[in-house]
Amino acid sequence: MAEKWLVIDAHNHYIPEKAKALTREADGMDFTASVKRLPVGYRATSDNERRIALMDEAGVDMVVLEQSAWSPKVRHDNIFGRRATMRVTVCELNDEPKKFEKDWKSLVSHVKDEGSEFVLLPEMPFFPWPFWRRKRDPVIWREAVKIHEASKERLADLVPGR
Image (cartoon, rainbow, N blue to C red):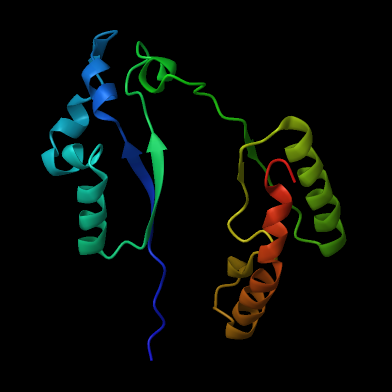
């Protein structure tokens, strides 16, 4: 039986209709021009039902939405009526187990101290990068998957307020 891959669209914009109405040319650039040339995609930026249908047609399982204002002259606060900033932490973690544990503890502490709302981890944070070899090693791959499965619960350490 073939293994099914999880397909994630990691670059997808959500633009509420109110934001589209406020978007305009700024500093000589029309920020909507590039997407208006793709009318199906442009309409789907604010129509989540249509977006889901397009994802299903394309075989996409999950999407990471990016909330955009599309113009430096339009502030997110004006569109959404609430605080529009987010505390983001981007990190690297050491592959060596002892150093990884030290890095992880520092990361957890940083997330709590700084009130991070979004943490971007390396692609495979809990296991040394297995793709540095020329030939794929299924034993190493299975070990990486096993370690990540066992380590998923540690992600809860990064949830704000815990």
